[in-house]
Length: 413
Image (cartoon, rainbow, N blue to C red; front, side, top):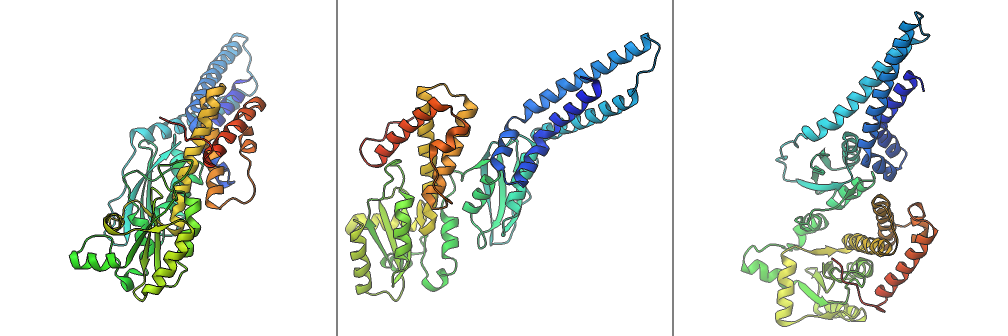
Protein backbone atom coordinates (compact mmCIF):
# COMPACT_ATOMS: atom_id res chain seq x y z
CA UNK A 1 0.00 0.00 0.00
CA UNK A 2 1.29 3.44 -0.89
CA UNK A 3 1.87 5.99 1.85
CA UNK A 4 -0.91 8.34 0.71
CA UNK A 5 -3.51 5.56 0.69
CA UNK A 6 -2.43 4.50 4.16
CA UNK A 7 -2.83 8.13 5.22
CA UNK A 8 -6.38 8.22 3.86
CA UNK A 9 -7.16 4.98 5.71
CA UNK A 10 -5.84 6.44 8.98
CA UNK A 11 -8.04 9.53 8.55
CA UNK A 12 -11.10 7.34 7.98
CA UNK A 13 -10.34 5.21 11.03
CA UNK A 14 -9.69 8.26 13.19
CA UNK A 15 -12.96 9.96 12.27
CA UNK A 16 -15.37 7.05 11.82
CA UNK A 17 -15.84 6.59 15.58
CA UNK A 18 -17.17 10.15 15.81
CA UNK A 19 -18.69 10.88 12.41
CA UNK A 20 -20.08 7.36 11.92
CA UNK A 21 -22.46 7.38 14.93
CA UNK A 22 -23.92 10.75 13.91
CA UNK A 23 -24.67 9.47 10.41
CA UNK A 24 -26.21 6.26 11.76
CA UNK A 25 -28.37 8.14 14.27
CA UNK A 26 -29.54 10.44 11.47
CA UNK A 27 -30.57 7.30 9.56
CA UNK A 28 -32.44 5.97 12.60
CA UNK A 29 -29.85 3.29 13.40
CA UNK A 30 -29.10 4.40 16.96
CA UNK A 31 -28.15 0.94 18.26
CA UNK A 32 -25.46 0.52 15.60
CA UNK A 33 -24.18 3.99 16.40
CA UNK A 34 -23.74 3.07 20.05
CA UNK A 35 -21.83 -0.08 19.11
CA UNK A 36 -19.38 1.93 16.99
CA UNK A 37 -18.97 4.48 19.78
CA UNK A 38 -18.25 1.75 22.30
CA UNK A 39 -15.12 0.73 20.37
CA UNK A 40 -13.95 4.21 19.46
CA UNK A 41 -10.54 3.85 21.13
CA UNK A 42 -9.84 0.81 18.94
CA UNK A 43 -10.53 2.95 15.87
CA UNK A 44 -8.36 5.78 17.18
CA UNK A 45 -5.55 3.36 18.09
CA UNK A 46 -5.71 1.71 14.68
CA UNK A 47 -5.67 5.13 13.03
CA UNK A 48 -2.50 6.11 14.90
CA UNK A 49 -0.77 2.82 14.01
CA UNK A 50 -1.66 3.16 10.33
CA UNK A 51 -0.58 6.82 10.31
CA UNK A 52 2.81 6.00 11.83
CA UNK A 53 3.24 3.26 9.24
CA UNK A 54 2.27 5.69 6.47
CA UNK A 55 4.86 8.28 7.54
CA UNK A 56 7.51 5.56 7.82
CA UNK A 57 6.62 4.39 4.34
CA UNK A 58 6.77 7.97 3.05
CA UNK A 59 10.29 8.61 4.38
CA UNK A 60 11.52 5.28 3.06
CA UNK A 61 10.21 6.19 -0.37
CA UNK A 62 11.92 9.59 -0.03
CA UNK A 63 15.23 7.96 0.89
CA UNK A 64 14.93 5.58 -2.04
CA UNK A 65 14.19 8.50 -4.32
CA UNK A 66 17.29 10.41 -3.11
CA UNK A 67 19.45 7.34 -3.49
CA UNK A 68 18.39 6.80 -7.08
CA UNK A 69 18.74 10.54 -7.88
CA UNK A 70 15.28 10.75 -9.42
CA UNK A 71 12.05 12.42 -8.51
CA UNK A 72 9.25 10.16 -7.42
CA UNK A 73 5.87 10.90 -9.06
CA UNK A 74 3.22 12.23 -6.69
CA UNK A 75 5.56 13.01 -3.79
CA UNK A 76 3.87 16.33 -3.04
CA UNK A 77 0.37 14.84 -3.15
CA UNK A 78 1.49 12.06 -0.83
CA UNK A 79 3.00 14.54 1.63
CA UNK A 80 -0.12 16.75 1.59
CA UNK A 81 -2.34 13.72 2.12
CA UNK A 82 -0.31 12.61 5.13
CA UNK A 83 -0.35 16.09 6.66
CA UNK A 84 -4.14 16.34 6.32
CA UNK A 85 -4.58 12.80 7.69
CA UNK A 86 -2.35 13.62 10.66
CA UNK A 87 -4.40 16.72 11.46
CA UNK A 88 -7.64 14.71 11.32
CA UNK A 89 -6.36 11.87 13.50
CA UNK A 90 -4.79 14.21 16.07
CA UNK A 91 -7.91 16.42 16.14
CA UNK A 92 -10.30 13.55 16.80
CA UNK A 93 -7.97 11.95 19.35
CA UNK A 94 -7.66 15.31 21.15
CA UNK A 95 -11.44 15.76 21.03
CA UNK A 96 -11.96 12.43 22.75
CA UNK A 97 -9.25 13.01 25.35
CA UNK A 98 -10.56 16.49 26.17
CA UNK A 99 -14.03 15.06 26.83
CA UNK A 100 -12.53 13.03 29.67
CA UNK A 101 -9.96 15.56 30.88
CA UNK A 102 -12.27 18.61 30.77
CA UNK A 103 -15.84 17.36 31.23
CA UNK A 104 -17.27 20.78 31.98
CA UNK A 105 -20.28 21.41 34.19
CA UNK A 106 -23.96 22.18 33.64
CA UNK A 107 -25.32 25.70 33.85
CA UNK A 108 -26.82 26.90 37.15
CA UNK A 109 -30.30 25.62 37.91
CA UNK A 110 -33.06 27.83 36.55
CA UNK A 111 -34.87 29.89 39.15
CA UNK A 112 -38.24 29.30 37.46
CA UNK A 113 -40.53 27.20 39.70
CA UNK A 114 -41.77 25.19 36.71
CA UNK A 115 -38.31 23.89 35.82
CA UNK A 116 -36.72 20.85 37.43
CA UNK A 117 -33.29 19.27 37.10
CA UNK A 118 -32.44 15.59 36.89
CA UNK A 119 -29.11 13.81 36.44
CA UNK A 120 -29.61 10.65 34.36
CA UNK A 121 -26.95 7.89 34.20
CA UNK A 122 -26.17 6.95 30.58
CA UNK A 123 -24.36 3.71 29.70
CA UNK A 124 -22.41 3.14 26.50
CA UNK A 125 -21.05 6.67 25.93
CA UNK A 126 -17.37 6.66 25.13
CA UNK A 127 -16.54 9.69 22.98
CA UNK A 128 -17.40 13.31 22.34
CA UNK A 129 -19.81 12.41 19.56
CA UNK A 130 -21.81 10.33 22.00
CA UNK A 131 -22.37 13.54 23.95
CA UNK A 132 -23.56 15.35 20.83
CA UNK A 133 -26.04 12.61 19.89
CA UNK A 134 -27.56 12.40 23.37
CA UNK A 135 -27.70 16.18 23.81
CA UNK A 136 -29.50 16.73 20.49
CA UNK A 137 -31.98 13.94 21.24
CA UNK A 138 -32.85 15.59 24.55
CA UNK A 139 -33.11 19.12 23.18
CA UNK A 140 -35.62 17.97 20.56
CA UNK A 141 -38.11 17.36 23.39
CA UNK A 142 -40.58 20.15 23.98
CA UNK A 143 -40.03 21.42 27.51
CA UNK A 144 -36.27 20.74 27.76
CA UNK A 145 -34.49 23.99 28.52
CA UNK A 146 -30.92 22.68 28.62
CA UNK A 147 -29.04 19.40 28.48
CA UNK A 148 -25.44 18.91 29.59
CA UNK A 149 -23.99 15.51 28.64
CA UNK A 150 -20.65 14.25 29.95
CA UNK A 151 -18.86 11.17 28.66
CA UNK A 152 -16.46 11.48 31.61
CA UNK A 153 -19.17 11.10 34.25
CA UNK A 154 -21.50 9.02 32.01
CA UNK A 155 -24.43 11.32 32.85
CA UNK A 156 -26.94 13.69 31.24
CA UNK A 157 -27.99 16.68 33.34
CA UNK A 158 -31.32 17.99 32.07
CA UNK A 159 -33.33 21.07 33.03
CA UNK A 160 -36.94 20.54 31.93
CA UNK A 161 -40.42 21.95 32.35
CA UNK A 162 -42.43 19.35 34.30
CA UNK A 163 -45.63 20.77 32.84
CA UNK A 164 -44.55 19.85 29.31
CA UNK A 165 -42.51 16.67 29.67
CA UNK A 166 -41.43 14.09 32.23
CA UNK A 167 -38.49 11.90 33.16
CA UNK A 168 -39.79 8.91 31.19
CA UNK A 169 -39.70 10.92 27.95
CA UNK A 170 -36.16 12.04 28.71
CA UNK A 171 -35.00 8.45 29.23
CA UNK A 172 -36.81 7.29 26.08
CA UNK A 173 -35.11 10.03 24.03
CA UNK A 174 -31.66 8.93 25.23
CA UNK A 175 -32.44 5.27 24.55
CA UNK A 176 -33.49 6.16 21.00
CA UNK A 177 -29.86 7.05 20.26
CA UNK A 178 -28.72 3.53 21.11
CA UNK A 179 -27.23 4.42 24.49
CA UNK A 180 -28.82 3.05 27.65
CA UNK A 181 -30.34 5.40 30.20
CA UNK A 182 -32.30 4.70 33.35
CA UNK A 183 -33.68 6.83 36.15
CA UNK A 184 -31.37 7.01 39.18
CA UNK A 185 -32.50 5.02 42.21
CA UNK A 186 -32.80 8.10 44.38
CA UNK A 187 -35.32 9.78 42.10
CA UNK A 188 -38.84 9.38 43.42
CA UNK A 189 -41.91 9.25 41.29
CA UNK A 190 -43.11 12.61 42.59
CA UNK A 191 -42.24 14.43 39.36
CA UNK A 192 -44.42 12.14 37.26
CA UNK A 193 -47.15 12.23 39.88
CA UNK A 194 -47.10 16.02 39.90
CA UNK A 195 -47.38 16.17 36.12
CA UNK A 196 -50.33 13.79 36.10
CA UNK A 197 -52.15 15.86 38.69
CA UNK A 198 -51.26 19.41 37.63
CA UNK A 199 -54.61 20.14 36.02
CA UNK A 200 -56.67 18.68 38.87
CA UNK A 201 -54.91 19.61 42.09
CA UNK A 202 -56.51 23.04 42.24
CA UNK A 203 -59.97 21.47 42.12
CA UNK A 204 -59.46 18.46 44.36
CA UNK A 205 -56.85 19.70 46.86
CA UNK A 206 -55.39 16.17 47.01
CA UNK A 207 -52.19 16.43 49.05
CA UNK A 208 -49.17 14.12 48.92
CA UNK A 209 -47.33 15.67 51.82
CA UNK A 210 -48.49 16.42 55.31
CA UNK A 211 -49.76 19.99 55.64
CA UNK A 212 -51.43 19.62 59.00
CA UNK A 213 -53.60 17.03 60.70
CA UNK A 214 -56.92 18.42 59.40
CA UNK A 215 -55.76 18.52 55.77
CA UNK A 216 -54.29 15.01 56.03
CA UNK A 217 -57.51 13.67 57.52
CA UNK A 218 -59.61 15.26 54.76
CA UNK A 219 -57.34 13.78 52.10
CA UNK A 220 -57.37 10.33 53.69
CA UNK A 221 -61.17 10.29 53.58
CA UNK A 222 -60.98 10.70 49.83
CA UNK A 223 -58.73 7.66 49.39
CA UNK A 224 -59.61 3.98 49.32
CA UNK A 225 -57.00 1.25 49.16
CA UNK A 226 -57.41 -2.29 47.88
CA UNK A 227 -55.20 -5.31 48.39
CA UNK A 228 -54.44 -6.60 44.87
CA UNK A 229 -52.62 -9.66 43.44
CA UNK A 230 -50.65 -7.76 40.80
CA UNK A 231 -47.13 -8.93 41.61
CA UNK A 232 -45.03 -9.67 38.53
CA UNK A 233 -44.53 -13.48 38.28
CA UNK A 234 -41.17 -13.09 36.53
CA UNK A 235 -39.94 -10.41 38.95
CA UNK A 236 -41.70 -10.74 42.33
CA UNK A 237 -40.01 -7.63 43.69
CA UNK A 238 -42.17 -5.36 41.49
CA UNK A 239 -45.75 -5.05 40.29
CA UNK A 240 -46.87 -6.26 36.87
CA UNK A 241 -47.24 -3.25 34.63
CA UNK A 242 -48.98 -5.04 31.76
CA UNK A 243 -51.59 -6.57 34.09
CA UNK A 244 -52.26 -3.45 36.15
CA UNK A 245 -52.31 -0.86 33.37
CA UNK A 246 -55.78 -1.72 31.95
CA UNK A 247 -57.22 -1.92 35.48
CA UNK A 248 -55.92 1.52 36.45
CA UNK A 249 -56.99 3.16 33.20
CA UNK A 250 -60.45 1.60 33.46
CA UNK A 251 -60.80 2.80 37.05
CA UNK A 252 -60.18 6.40 36.02
CA UNK A 253 -63.00 6.12 33.52
CA UNK A 254 -65.43 5.26 36.30
CA UNK A 255 -67.81 7.91 37.64
CA UNK A 256 -66.50 9.36 40.88
CA UNK A 257 -62.88 8.23 40.42
CA UNK A 258 -60.27 10.96 40.05
CA UNK A 259 -57.05 8.90 40.12
CA UNK A 260 -55.99 5.25 40.38
CA UNK A 261 -52.49 4.20 41.49
CA UNK A 262 -50.48 1.01 42.02
CA UNK A 263 -47.68 0.64 44.54
CA UNK A 264 -44.29 -0.56 43.34
CA UNK A 265 -44.71 -3.98 44.92
CA UNK A 266 -47.93 -4.59 42.97
CA UNK A 267 -49.87 -5.40 46.13
CA UNK A 268 -52.04 -2.30 46.64
CA UNK A 269 -54.30 -0.19 44.42
CA UNK A 270 -55.11 3.30 45.70
CA UNK A 271 -58.22 5.09 44.43
CA UNK A 272 -58.60 8.86 44.89
CA UNK A 273 -62.25 9.91 44.75
CA UNK A 274 -63.70 13.05 43.25
CA UNK A 275 -65.32 15.46 45.74
CA UNK A 276 -68.79 14.66 44.35
CA UNK A 277 -68.42 10.87 44.69
CA UNK A 278 -70.95 9.21 46.99
CA UNK A 279 -71.17 5.94 48.91
CA UNK A 280 -73.01 4.13 46.11
CA UNK A 281 -70.39 5.11 43.56
CA UNK A 282 -67.63 3.82 45.80
CA UNK A 283 -69.46 0.54 46.40
CA UNK A 284 -69.88 0.01 42.65
CA UNK A 285 -66.17 0.52 42.04
CA UNK A 286 -65.26 -1.76 44.93
CA UNK A 287 -67.57 -4.45 43.49
CA UNK A 288 -65.86 -4.20 40.10
CA UNK A 289 -62.44 -4.47 41.71
CA UNK A 290 -63.52 -7.67 43.43
CA UNK A 291 -63.77 -9.23 39.97
CA UNK A 292 -60.04 -8.50 39.66
CA UNK A 293 -59.54 -10.18 43.07
CA UNK A 294 -58.86 -6.83 44.74
CA UNK A 295 -60.24 -6.51 48.29
CA UNK A 296 -60.73 -3.20 50.10
CA UNK A 297 -58.44 -2.74 53.08
CA UNK A 298 -59.73 -1.62 56.49
CA UNK A 299 -58.40 -0.70 59.90
CA UNK A 300 -54.70 -0.36 60.68
CA UNK A 301 -53.51 -1.91 57.43
CA UNK A 302 -55.62 0.60 55.53
CA UNK A 303 -54.20 3.53 57.51
CA UNK A 304 -50.63 2.38 56.88
CA UNK A 305 -51.30 1.98 53.16
CA UNK A 306 -52.85 5.45 52.92
CA UNK A 307 -49.89 6.95 54.78
CA UNK A 308 -47.50 5.28 52.37
CA UNK A 309 -49.52 6.56 49.42
CA UNK A 310 -49.50 10.11 50.75
CA UNK A 311 -45.70 9.98 50.93
CA UNK A 312 -45.72 10.08 47.13
CA UNK A 313 -42.90 7.53 46.80
CA UNK A 314 -43.10 4.32 44.84
CA UNK A 315 -46.58 4.74 43.35
CA UNK A 316 -47.53 4.62 39.67
CA UNK A 317 -50.61 6.03 38.00
CA UNK A 318 -52.19 4.70 34.79
CA UNK A 319 -49.70 4.53 31.94
CA UNK A 320 -46.84 5.23 34.39
CA UNK A 321 -46.82 1.50 35.19
CA UNK A 322 -45.06 1.08 31.84
CA UNK A 323 -41.94 1.85 33.87
CA UNK A 324 -42.51 -1.35 35.81
CA UNK A 325 -42.91 -3.22 32.53
CA UNK A 326 -39.63 -1.77 31.29
CA UNK A 327 -37.93 -2.88 34.48
CA UNK A 328 -39.46 -6.34 34.11
CA UNK A 329 -38.12 -6.52 30.54
CA UNK A 330 -34.61 -5.81 31.83
CA UNK A 331 -34.87 -8.47 34.52
CA UNK A 332 -36.10 -11.15 32.10
CA UNK A 333 -33.52 -10.24 29.44
CA UNK A 334 -30.66 -10.43 31.94
CA UNK A 335 -31.89 -13.82 33.19
CA UNK A 336 -32.20 -15.27 29.67
CA UNK A 337 -28.69 -14.16 28.77
CA UNK A 338 -27.30 -15.63 32.01
CA UNK A 339 -28.92 -18.97 31.21
CA UNK A 340 -27.49 -18.93 27.69
CA UNK A 341 -23.98 -18.06 28.90
CA UNK A 342 -24.17 -20.83 31.50
CA UNK A 343 -24.49 -23.42 28.73
CA UNK A 344 -22.37 -21.99 25.93
CA UNK A 345 -19.36 -19.74 25.40
CA UNK A 346 -20.56 -16.25 24.49
CA UNK A 347 -18.28 -13.24 24.15
CA UNK A 348 -19.00 -10.30 26.43
CA UNK A 349 -19.83 -7.90 23.59
CA UNK A 350 -22.26 -10.37 22.03
CA UNK A 351 -23.85 -11.07 25.40
CA UNK A 352 -24.35 -7.34 26.00
CA UNK A 353 -25.77 -6.84 22.50
CA UNK A 354 -28.09 -9.81 22.94
CA UNK A 355 -29.35 -8.51 26.28
CA UNK A 356 -30.08 -5.07 24.83
CA UNK A 357 -31.91 -6.54 21.84
CA UNK A 358 -34.00 -8.91 23.97
CA UNK A 359 -34.77 -6.19 26.51
CA UNK A 360 -35.86 -3.78 23.78
CA UNK A 361 -38.17 -6.40 22.25
CA UNK A 362 -39.69 -7.35 25.60
CA UNK A 363 -40.13 -3.71 26.55
CA UNK A 364 -42.16 -3.03 23.42
CA UNK A 365 -44.26 -6.15 23.93
CA UNK A 366 -44.98 -5.49 27.61
CA UNK A 367 -45.88 -1.84 27.10
CA UNK A 368 -48.01 -2.45 24.02
CA UNK A 369 -45.70 -0.46 21.75
CA UNK A 370 -44.70 -3.33 19.50
CA UNK A 371 -45.60 -2.85 15.82
CA UNK A 372 -45.92 -6.56 15.15
CA UNK A 373 -45.05 -10.03 16.43
CA UNK A 374 -41.45 -10.30 17.60
CA UNK A 375 -39.87 -13.68 18.29
CA UNK A 376 -36.91 -13.46 20.61
CA UNK A 377 -35.00 -16.14 18.74
CA UNK A 378 -35.26 -14.08 15.53
CA UNK A 379 -33.99 -10.99 17.32
CA UNK A 380 -31.10 -13.02 18.74
CA UNK A 381 -29.81 -14.36 15.42
CA UNK A 382 -27.50 -11.39 15.06
CA UNK A 383 -25.63 -12.53 18.17
CA UNK A 384 -26.04 -16.32 18.38
CA UNK A 385 -25.27 -19.24 16.09
CA UNK A 386 -27.76 -22.03 15.40
CA UNK A 387 -26.77 -24.17 18.39
CA UNK A 388 -26.93 -21.19 20.71
CA UNK A 389 -30.38 -20.32 19.36
CA UNK A 390 -31.56 -23.78 20.49
CA UNK A 391 -30.22 -23.06 23.97
CA UNK A 392 -32.06 -19.72 23.99
CA UNK A 393 -35.31 -21.45 23.00
CA UNK A 394 -34.98 -23.77 26.00
CA UNK A 395 -34.31 -20.78 28.24
CA UNK A 396 -37.44 -19.09 26.89
CA UNK A 397 -39.47 -22.21 27.74
CA UNK A 398 -38.14 -22.04 31.30
CA UNK A 399 -39.05 -18.34 31.49
CA UNK A 400 -42.58 -19.05 30.29
CA UNK A 401 -42.88 -21.74 32.97
CA UNK A 402 -41.90 -19.15 35.59
CA UNK A 403 -44.46 -16.67 34.34
CA UNK A 404 -47.15 -19.38 34.34
CA UNK A 405 -46.30 -20.34 37.91
CA UNK A 406 -45.12 -23.81 36.86
CA UNK A 407 -41.69 -23.33 38.39
CA UNK A 408 -40.22 -20.93 40.98
CA UNK A 409 -38.21 -17.84 40.15
CA UNK A 410 -34.52 -18.79 40.40
CA UNK A 411 -32.39 -17.20 43.07
CA UNK A 412 -30.19 -14.63 41.38
CA UNK A 413 -27.30 -12.54 42.61
